[in-house]
Image (cartoon, rainbow over all chains, first blue to last red; front, side, top):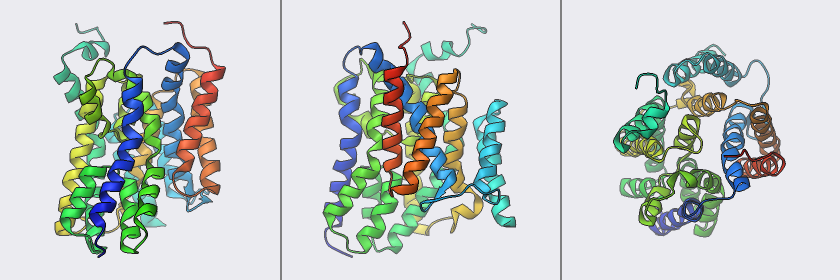
Length: 106
Length: 237
């Protein structure tokens, strides 16, 4: 293995910390104007689907929207159970089991 | 007190709110732990020493970028390329940090500098679904659970190998989108919430089809929340 592993790790640690600390420190300091507060409240609503939907529907740059794609059915299970306010643990367990089962059959 | 509703817990002592965040995150602990073992196992197979794998996990603490960095390290990629790739993959933290910040008003700056290291996708999702802006102690409880799960999985993986050879075969990879999806579902109250969520997901899919890496999260997150914040009316407090 190369000799600069710790140097790379240190660089990765600094780069990652620079994505986490600056805005947390800057925006936690004072009361914020209403429109900025609105923006901060809307970020999760935009970011969480932006994290989730490509994980379900995109694989290596290809759209996976066919009924033979197990994660699609996992997503249906999640949405139905979440609408019924089933607790998170049971929701995740059933969704994971559904995907595992369909992959096992497929 | 019995009919005080969920607000009662948020007014309670920090220890109770921390515990609530910890407990609320237990659903994800098995998957995060298993992915920690998989990372540990893969990284030692790629030629890293266990100490380096633990060091990277503790100091970087961002699973996706670590999974990408290890094969790059093994393939002899330039250090600068690995660090830049890590930065780009983790740029989504800017959005989460901004969104979490109002919750931590009044915390000492030294605390914030430490809290920043524990920003992660899963705890962010769990905390904002519970309350937005989140409860800081609830968030810290969640980050504790997720952090401990990952950091205890990694050494198990470096010593024993990944506990599960193919997590995807058992559907464990699906735990992550599943939890994000379940937590979006409980946040959709107004039709504008639906619009923002659908636009965020739709734009992210479109960008993910043309750009590799994690750009879709950052682009969809900034563009959709930014446009919505300009167009919608801030509620009067």
